[in-house]
Image (cartoon, rainbow, N blue to C red):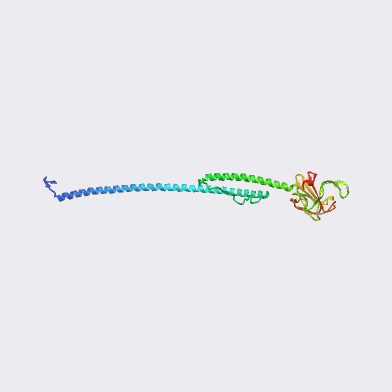
Length: 307
């Protein structure tokens, strides 16, 4: 390679012939310059890529944070709804348990009223159930299925409770009617000494109408009410001597005469079989006995039909 040098003033030109080492140095210098420029461009490119990746990474992190917050909010809403549903089911369960206790109580009352043993109807024990093991284990029930079953059970309990309550009232009314209806003998111990109807009067010897039944016994024996009711009279009354009258309702009354002592007063409520007087022979009487009468709507009935 030749280098031509031209002077500015004299116009003379000189030619230089560089040596081989100089040429190599120039080439190396040019290569170094080009390489430096390329390396700088490469580093600049890496920096730009890094900055772009940082922006992308920051954007992704922001998006995931937003999704995480939304997920947490949805989870909190689900937990809140679940708690409300559990509270509602708990309240329903408490109501059903209370109804079940009432049904058990009614059932026990009915068992007692019907005089049935606990072995046949034991409301304190769980109902006996069983059966062979199912071939399939079955599927888990959903919350909606459980709510439907609870609703159905609640409806059945309400229906049973009404039915048992009605039956309890019917039995109670029947028991009240049984208590009120005269039934049995007016003494704890004794025998019939004179029937209802015509007889020979023990004082006059003439044929006379006897309005009741005489039940003889020992002096001081028990005189008992043959039915529950309200005492409408407890006093001394002429030939009846010491006398008790009980109103059983529905126009039905019973009377007990010739007592030695009265144990009840007017207005008292008496039960069936309760002692109301002490047997004696007061009034028009020949010995210790009870003159027993039954009156329905003002008309005397034959006490034998009630004894």
